[in-house]
Length: 206
Image (cartoon, rainbow, N blue to C red):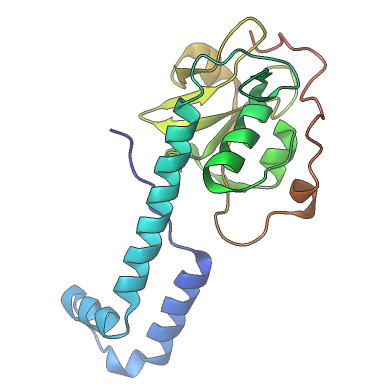
């Protein structure tokens, strides 16, 4: 079973911190149970649960949408299931169709416009990047849990799930990113060019 994403928006974290700071006199050496009661009184637990449920639902939709494209052939410059996908076109299409977020067209642009996270923090729906063409962020996929990711690999292949633990991917792992689900993405993502190719070599992955 895929693990659920557990993110709380930065705005909510800041609001909680502000509430706790402003009410410090009401929380002298509180136990965990007392803190829970305080948060419940302020309505924060309900808000946190609501945000967690929303994010978990979005992650489930995104991964389910990605899995729905299994078997779609690779096509250099492709951005739809009818004609095929390249790696970044696949990611862009999944995010746009499942949760309505428009990412930049190119893999390196997707890396630059999203939040850097450690590999140990990976959750379903996060992006994983690889150096497959002797340059950074030249390949991208979507993490689906349990050390696996889904991607459009190369010419002659189809969208598939692979383990990040394989020696090929371990050697080429370039970093992980989290796509913000609240707030606006950078301007270049809004004006992403749908036909901008990811690379000059459609068979460069392997």
